[in-house]
Image (cartoon, rainbow, N blue to C red):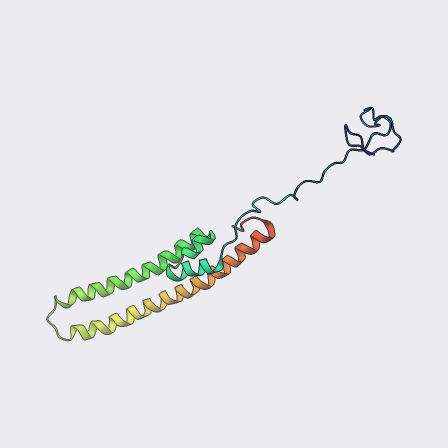
Length: 158
């Protein structure tokens, strides 16, 4: 039997609690302490999981946006700036070459510029494509890491 006042376990025939001195009375029923309605959950256990498909779709169309969705803001901004910075550089080179076409009367100017321009724009495009692929692979891995940490600890890993 348990003391209704302090919860100390006592022999069944006790009239007074040995711990707090409360009068128990003859045949007093031991109080039943109910179990908590639900087990304690760690802080942040209700964090939503991130969808791998959504993060891939975001990263597919706008490199870096999938990282921002997962919570990796700095990494997402780095991918955004590098990808779109290289795209803007490529566009500026092409635009400048188109502008110079009307300023010159040399017929070989277009042939000389186009080979150099194609090489530069081709290298920039290759680097942009590599950044885009790395972005897709990394966002998938980061989303899986985030979901695993939320399932295991109930908290975001970063």
